[in-house]
Image 1 (tube, rainbow, N blue to C red):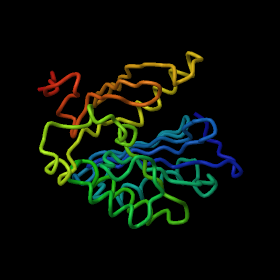
Image 2: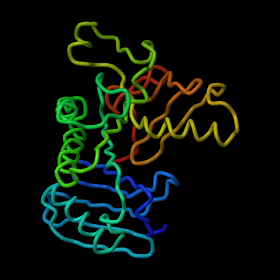
Image 3: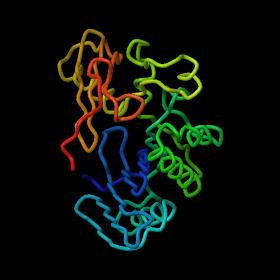
Length: 254
Protein backbone atom coordinates (compact mmCIF):
# COMPACT_ATOMS: atom_id res chain seq x y z
CA UNK A 1 0.00 0.00 0.00
CA UNK A 2 1.51 3.29 -1.09
CA UNK A 3 1.13 6.46 0.94
CA UNK A 4 2.23 8.80 -1.83
CA UNK A 5 -0.66 10.81 -3.23
CA UNK A 6 0.52 13.30 -5.85
CA UNK A 7 -1.62 16.43 -5.97
CA UNK A 8 -2.25 15.88 -9.68
CA UNK A 9 -3.81 12.45 -9.06
CA UNK A 10 -7.47 12.32 -8.10
CA UNK A 11 -8.58 10.28 -5.11
CA UNK A 12 -11.94 9.22 -3.69
CA UNK A 13 -12.79 8.92 -0.01
CA UNK A 14 -15.16 6.01 0.60
CA UNK A 15 -17.28 5.88 3.79
CA UNK A 16 -19.34 2.99 5.13
CA UNK A 17 -21.34 4.11 8.17
CA UNK A 18 -22.82 1.31 10.26
CA UNK A 19 -25.04 1.52 13.31
CA UNK A 20 -22.02 1.61 15.64
CA UNK A 21 -19.08 1.71 13.24
CA UNK A 22 -17.41 3.71 10.50
CA UNK A 23 -15.18 2.14 7.86
CA UNK A 24 -13.29 4.26 5.39
CA UNK A 25 -10.70 4.13 2.62
CA UNK A 26 -8.88 6.69 0.56
CA UNK A 27 -8.72 5.15 -2.91
CA UNK A 28 -6.87 5.91 -6.12
CA UNK A 29 -9.67 5.17 -8.60
CA UNK A 30 -7.25 4.84 -11.51
CA UNK A 31 -5.54 1.81 -9.95
CA UNK A 32 -7.94 0.71 -7.22
CA UNK A 33 -5.13 1.10 -4.67
CA UNK A 34 -6.16 1.91 -1.11
CA UNK A 35 -3.87 4.68 0.11
CA UNK A 36 -5.30 4.52 3.63
CA UNK A 37 -7.77 2.28 5.45
CA UNK A 38 -9.56 2.95 8.72
CA UNK A 39 -12.09 1.49 11.11
CA UNK A 40 -14.00 3.05 14.01
CA UNK A 41 -15.90 0.65 16.27
CA UNK A 42 -18.14 0.96 19.33
CA UNK A 43 -19.46 4.38 18.37
CA UNK A 44 -21.73 5.60 21.15
CA UNK A 45 -20.25 3.33 23.83
CA UNK A 46 -18.03 4.36 26.72
CA UNK A 47 -14.85 3.44 24.86
CA UNK A 48 -14.45 3.22 21.10
CA UNK A 49 -11.75 1.48 19.06
CA UNK A 50 -9.86 3.26 16.28
CA UNK A 51 -7.48 1.85 13.68
CA UNK A 52 -5.93 3.83 10.83
CA UNK A 53 -3.45 2.28 8.37
CA UNK A 54 -1.41 4.13 5.77
CA UNK A 55 1.22 1.82 4.34
CA UNK A 56 3.59 0.77 7.15
CA UNK A 57 2.20 3.43 9.48
CA UNK A 58 -0.54 2.22 11.79
CA UNK A 59 -2.34 4.12 14.55
CA UNK A 60 -4.53 2.36 17.12
CA UNK A 61 -6.49 4.18 19.79
CA UNK A 62 -9.06 3.54 22.48
CA UNK A 63 -11.11 6.64 23.22
CA UNK A 64 -14.73 7.78 23.45
CA UNK A 65 -16.46 8.14 20.08
CA UNK A 66 -19.84 9.61 21.02
CA UNK A 67 -21.35 9.74 17.53
CA UNK A 68 -20.62 9.53 13.81
CA UNK A 69 -19.67 13.20 13.65
CA UNK A 70 -16.94 12.54 16.22
CA UNK A 71 -15.87 9.39 14.34
CA UNK A 72 -15.38 11.21 11.06
CA UNK A 73 -13.65 14.12 12.78
CA UNK A 74 -11.20 11.67 14.38
CA UNK A 75 -10.64 10.02 11.00
CA UNK A 76 -9.88 13.35 9.32
CA UNK A 77 -7.44 14.21 12.11
CA UNK A 78 -5.67 10.85 11.65
CA UNK A 79 -5.19 11.53 7.96
CA UNK A 80 -3.25 14.64 8.91
CA UNK A 81 -1.37 12.94 11.75
CA UNK A 82 -0.55 9.56 10.16
CA UNK A 83 -1.11 10.28 6.47
CA UNK A 84 -1.72 10.73 3.72
CA UNK A 85 -2.71 14.35 4.17
CA UNK A 86 -6.16 15.03 2.74
CA UNK A 87 -5.07 18.59 2.05
CA UNK A 88 -2.78 17.18 -0.66
CA UNK A 89 -4.92 14.19 -1.69
CA UNK A 90 -6.96 15.97 -4.39
CA UNK A 91 -10.23 14.33 -3.30
CA UNK A 92 -12.74 14.64 -6.14
CA UNK A 93 -15.66 12.81 -4.50
CA UNK A 94 -16.83 11.04 -1.35
CA UNK A 95 -18.62 7.73 -1.87
CA UNK A 96 -21.13 6.34 0.63
CA UNK A 97 -22.41 2.79 0.85
CA UNK A 98 -26.19 2.70 1.44
CA UNK A 99 -27.89 -0.61 2.12
CA UNK A 100 -31.45 0.05 0.95
CA UNK A 101 -32.43 2.01 -2.13
CA UNK A 102 -35.96 0.62 -2.11
CA UNK A 103 -38.04 1.27 -5.23
CA UNK A 104 -36.49 4.74 -5.62
CA UNK A 105 -32.83 4.15 -6.50
CA UNK A 106 -31.55 1.72 -9.11
CA UNK A 107 -28.13 3.36 -9.62
CA UNK A 108 -25.64 5.55 -7.74
CA UNK A 109 -26.81 9.12 -7.18
CA UNK A 110 -25.14 12.42 -6.33
CA UNK A 111 -26.60 13.31 -2.95
CA UNK A 112 -28.52 16.53 -2.47
CA UNK A 113 -30.99 17.38 0.28
CA UNK A 114 -33.85 15.67 -1.57
CA UNK A 115 -31.89 12.43 -2.11
CA UNK A 116 -30.79 12.36 1.53
CA UNK A 117 -34.40 12.81 2.65
CA UNK A 118 -35.44 9.85 0.48
CA UNK A 119 -32.66 7.67 1.89
CA UNK A 120 -33.83 8.51 5.41
CA UNK A 121 -37.41 7.76 4.36
CA UNK A 122 -36.41 4.24 3.31
CA UNK A 123 -35.31 3.42 6.87
CA UNK A 124 -38.34 1.17 7.57
CA UNK A 125 -36.94 -1.22 4.93
CA UNK A 126 -33.49 -1.31 6.61
CA UNK A 127 -33.92 0.03 10.15
CA UNK A 128 -30.45 -1.03 11.32
CA UNK A 129 -28.62 0.36 8.33
CA UNK A 130 -30.22 3.26 6.48
CA UNK A 131 -30.40 5.60 9.51
CA UNK A 132 -26.67 5.13 10.10
CA UNK A 133 -25.95 5.44 6.36
CA UNK A 134 -27.92 8.70 6.24
CA UNK A 135 -26.13 10.03 9.32
CA UNK A 136 -22.76 9.29 7.73
CA UNK A 137 -23.78 11.12 4.57
CA UNK A 138 -25.07 14.13 6.49
CA UNK A 139 -21.89 14.34 8.58
CA UNK A 140 -19.69 13.84 5.52
CA UNK A 141 -21.45 16.61 3.60
CA UNK A 142 -21.02 18.94 6.56
CA UNK A 143 -17.33 18.23 7.14
CA UNK A 144 -16.37 17.89 3.46
CA UNK A 145 -18.70 20.35 1.73
CA UNK A 146 -16.58 21.20 -1.30
CA UNK A 147 -16.79 17.85 -3.15
CA UNK A 148 -19.76 15.84 -4.45
CA UNK A 149 -21.06 13.02 -2.26
CA UNK A 150 -22.30 9.92 -4.07
CA UNK A 151 -24.55 7.21 -2.60
CA UNK A 152 -24.12 3.66 -3.91
CA UNK A 153 -26.91 1.23 -3.07
CA UNK A 154 -26.58 -2.45 -2.16
CA UNK A 155 -29.99 -3.09 -3.68
CA UNK A 156 -29.39 -1.21 -6.93
CA UNK A 157 -28.05 -4.20 -8.89
CA UNK A 158 -31.16 -6.25 -8.07
CA UNK A 159 -33.62 -3.45 -8.84
CA UNK A 160 -34.49 -5.01 -12.21
CA UNK A 161 -35.08 -8.57 -10.97
CA UNK A 162 -37.80 -10.24 -13.06
CA UNK A 163 -41.23 -10.17 -11.45
CA UNK A 164 -41.15 -13.93 -10.88
CA UNK A 165 -38.16 -13.48 -8.59
CA UNK A 166 -39.01 -10.12 -7.01
CA UNK A 167 -42.70 -10.63 -6.21
CA UNK A 168 -44.02 -12.08 -2.96
CA UNK A 169 -47.34 -13.91 -2.71
CA UNK A 170 -49.12 -10.94 -1.16
CA UNK A 171 -52.12 -8.86 -2.15
CA UNK A 172 -50.86 -6.41 -4.78
CA UNK A 173 -52.23 -3.33 -3.00
CA UNK A 174 -50.54 -4.32 0.27
CA UNK A 175 -47.21 -4.96 -1.46
CA UNK A 176 -47.37 -1.62 -3.26
CA UNK A 177 -48.46 0.33 -0.18
CA UNK A 178 -45.59 -0.95 1.97
CA UNK A 179 -43.02 -1.39 -0.85
CA UNK A 180 -42.75 -5.12 -0.20
CA UNK A 181 -40.68 -7.05 -2.74
CA UNK A 182 -37.43 -8.98 -2.93
CA UNK A 183 -34.70 -6.33 -2.90
CA UNK A 184 -31.62 -8.51 -2.50
CA UNK A 185 -28.41 -7.44 -0.80
CA UNK A 186 -24.67 -7.14 -1.44
CA UNK A 187 -25.46 -5.98 -4.98
CA UNK A 188 -22.21 -4.04 -5.37
CA UNK A 189 -20.29 -7.24 -4.62
CA UNK A 190 -22.36 -9.45 -6.93
CA UNK A 191 -22.08 -6.98 -9.80
CA UNK A 192 -18.32 -6.55 -9.36
CA UNK A 193 -17.63 -10.28 -9.08
CA UNK A 194 -19.71 -11.16 -12.14
CA UNK A 195 -17.83 -8.61 -14.24
CA UNK A 196 -14.46 -9.71 -12.84
CA UNK A 197 -15.21 -13.33 -13.78
CA UNK A 198 -15.94 -12.35 -17.37
CA UNK A 199 -12.72 -10.35 -17.52
CA UNK A 200 -10.68 -13.18 -16.00
CA UNK A 201 -12.11 -15.73 -18.44
CA UNK A 202 -11.71 -13.39 -21.38
CA UNK A 203 -15.35 -13.88 -22.37
CA UNK A 204 -18.16 -11.40 -22.99
CA UNK A 205 -20.29 -10.90 -19.90
CA UNK A 206 -23.40 -11.27 -22.06
CA UNK A 207 -22.42 -14.88 -22.86
CA UNK A 208 -22.08 -16.07 -19.25
CA UNK A 209 -24.53 -17.68 -16.84
CA UNK A 210 -23.16 -17.40 -13.31
CA UNK A 211 -23.89 -18.32 -9.72
CA UNK A 212 -22.15 -15.68 -7.59
CA UNK A 213 -21.52 -16.08 -3.86
CA UNK A 214 -20.85 -13.25 -1.43
CA UNK A 215 -19.33 -14.73 1.72
CA UNK A 216 -18.54 -12.57 4.72
CA UNK A 217 -20.23 -11.47 7.93
CA UNK A 218 -23.33 -11.65 5.76
CA UNK A 219 -23.64 -14.17 2.93
CA UNK A 220 -25.79 -14.27 -0.18
CA UNK A 221 -26.02 -15.96 -3.57
CA UNK A 222 -27.25 -14.73 -6.92
CA UNK A 223 -28.06 -16.13 -10.34
CA UNK A 224 -26.80 -13.82 -13.09
CA UNK A 225 -27.61 -14.30 -16.78
CA UNK A 226 -25.74 -12.24 -19.30
CA UNK A 227 -24.75 -9.70 -16.67
CA UNK A 228 -28.30 -9.21 -15.35
CA UNK A 229 -29.49 -10.75 -12.05
CA UNK A 230 -32.44 -13.13 -12.35
CA UNK A 231 -32.61 -14.30 -8.72
CA UNK A 232 -30.97 -13.84 -5.34
CA UNK A 233 -31.02 -15.58 -1.98
CA UNK A 234 -31.89 -12.47 0.03
CA UNK A 235 -35.36 -11.00 -0.06
CA UNK A 236 -37.09 -8.03 1.55
CA UNK A 237 -34.64 -8.62 4.41
CA UNK A 238 -31.76 -11.08 4.90
CA UNK A 239 -34.07 -13.42 6.83
CA UNK A 240 -35.89 -14.79 3.79
CA UNK A 241 -34.50 -16.90 0.94
CA UNK A 242 -35.15 -16.62 -2.76
CA UNK A 243 -37.77 -18.22 -4.96
CA UNK A 244 -35.39 -21.06 -5.73
CA UNK A 245 -34.29 -21.50 -2.10
CA UNK A 246 -37.45 -20.75 -0.08
CA UNK A 247 -37.68 -20.65 3.68
CA UNK A 248 -35.75 -18.90 6.39
CA UNK A 249 -31.99 -18.83 6.25
CA UNK A 250 -30.62 -21.07 8.99
CA UNK A 251 -27.52 -20.22 10.94
CA UNK A 252 -25.03 -22.05 13.13
CA UNK A 253 -24.46 -18.92 15.20
CA UNK A 254 -25.67 -19.14 18.81
